[in-house]
Image (cartoon, rainbow, N blue to C red; front, side):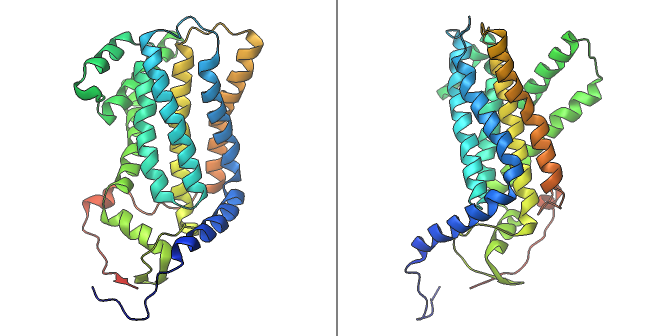
Length: 286
């Protein structure tokens, strides 16, 4: 491709810092309803392995702890990327967070699953993302039955689809797909069919619901992992110490749902069934 003589890219690398600073300032106010939920979830996750407990040296908990560290790093990265306006990139990290966090759910309290993982070729997780979703809901089902709260299989099948839908959606953003590429390109559009080929934070109002879906889904993944991890540690903390932790962790769900209800009411840029259609637009690059 021949470039016009007047084409210049010098200085655009440093310009990224300026646009990201503006984006962070703008989005810090817009996304404020989500930040406390993220903060409480992260801090609860960091605190979880510090409790005096009876199972800290159990192999399933030691391996789960390594995935907890990785999940917390993913979790922080999602927030930083969203806060800088890089929604699609945050979605890619959120896909990794889904897998890392649900591996914690699979491992914590299950020496059998830990052994299966250790025996897997190359250390690869032997469960598919959908199997991880089913394993997580099976844990939820067992806990409900112990508490005398029985629900039909249709309810739990819906829960599996609900968890897995989030993963599928962010993966369609992570992988090279036309709908996600087109939406991302519109973040630097100059008119209806032209856009600038460069990195740039996406501050469009029509991207806000997408941001909220990535944030809410990430919180749900992280919350589920932390809860499962703590419940299988054999915690020996004082009632007051554990109550403080539980209060912080339990606040996360209500706060994040409330934030989503305030900010996430718009349409998503694409639905999963969009990937089964031929929906291509000619785009002129500038």
